[in-house]
Length: 406
Image (spheres, rainbow, N blue to C red):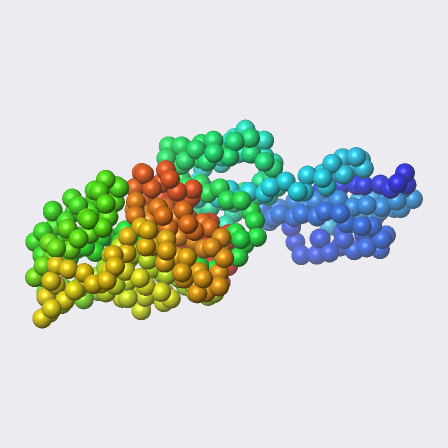
């Protein structure tokens, strides 16, 4: 191997069509072997790296031709020799784990990125790539209330302490008001197929039972029970029965009026359009009521709805329910059942919810996301979104705005 030369070239300058083609054509004419290649474009500025293998006899001619071509293209080129030992050491590291770190919020600043990359360095991980998933931001976008910004880091290595890393990211997200996701970059992350959602305070910005209670004149009593249940302070099934009992005598027609005026969570329509276009199966698994779940199914195209059925007699709610209660345990069971029916590995599933009764579902799914969740839920779930709408889920799946908007 004494006649082998490994050369890394770095090309930078104004980007335009044909630069990469012209330079790789030179390598092809000299029978060079490209061992690694990477390219990025930031605001029409090109950064291209190529590591190639050649022989001592041909290396001089290759570098000369590349130098002249770069002069002709008005770009800069830098040559760096790479030793065989360094290259083999680099190859040996390819078996190390790869992680995807996604940060998102209404607006990301240098402070946010510095804090995240500092923790990456502390964990002795190496950044392989960085890409912006959200679209190009106009200068006045900071004042747009529904603006969003997302950056994805691809890092390699084994964290010193992955639990401490997650804890630090949670601390940063709460202190600096942006969201951070840490996922192992394995085959399952790239082929998720089923996503299950809680309904109340997730797909819609309200608790339907509270809306019903207001119409029945028992809003204060029901809200107190709801909040206690969502915080995990009382058993969900018991709280459910107590709240439903307070609705006795309410006219059935009220449900339709509430359904037609539900406050839809920001980003739901956009998220569902993308999920349906890309073949995801979607489900609503709710401790709420089937009437409202079916309304959302028809409006947005969900594939499954499992929730609780209110008993109606002579056009009035009886204060009772029909069938088993869909509580936290039942949500996790339903997620597994749907995955089996659709022949989807549980690692390919996603669950999104906000309450304590969503925790079994979030922990069962391959990817569990706490959405604008209560503190207990956010601390327990591995991933969370608290700063933007439901379409933030798409960024955790690796979607880019350039695809979402196409």
